[in-house]
Image 1 (cartoon, one colour):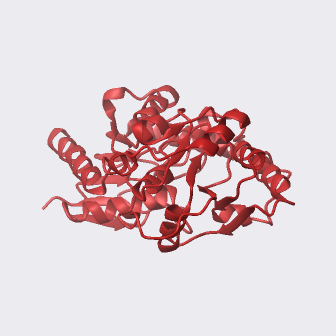
Image 2: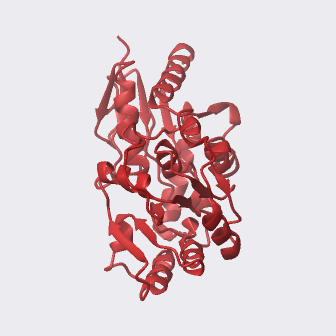
Length: 329
């Protein structure tokens, strides 16, 4: 039987969303279709020689997450190009420059690349100079736990995720303050009180903390387990993804799976993922975002849009990529 290795992210500790979510759900879905093993990352030559194909599902532009020599049949997943697209907001140091050269060189040599949206595919073509034919798109999906539940709707706005510059959270906060509505910001990064607020990458967090300092309408619960997050999505008047750029935008699908109205921008992958299920705003405008939040109504297409994405389909498409490589290399 064909043996496939799915390599653990070298920095897997604490990854719940993002790449960690991708690896966990991909492994579960693939295990129903192929013989796949989750293996430890290694820089050692020959570490993966017993496997017919090796899939590296975690990639970081500025850290060493690929070995010196890739196996003969190697797939690399690159989920987005945020740091490359907005270099001014994600500065690269000397070590990062060395890592980027290493990572790019090896990604280009991979047998195939997998990414999670057509928007991200275009960015990979641009920044890595990898031919489009070599890049495959397999979408993410919301966990099945996210679904409508009977619970009283409340009037708050919900956001789930990180605090990086591309998330554009100061605009969301100002929009909510303009219409005097409550806002719940879910994510562990909001509670990183020991963060170096002089660092350029932490300037968004510094601005966020300043904006909400004396605003009782803004609540920060920190990390919220999935079971409780389902309740928050269902209770929220609206879920807002104010991002300037996303490689995918998973919380949009989680909210839609719960039948909750979504307001987001069109940039990056967001319009590709949200489709007809969202209300779109100019996320660079406090006034327009505030107006869309205040007047949003369910489209009636939220759940149907979310159902277009499933981990079963993602696993099926990933298996097809594996089979194509095994047949041709």
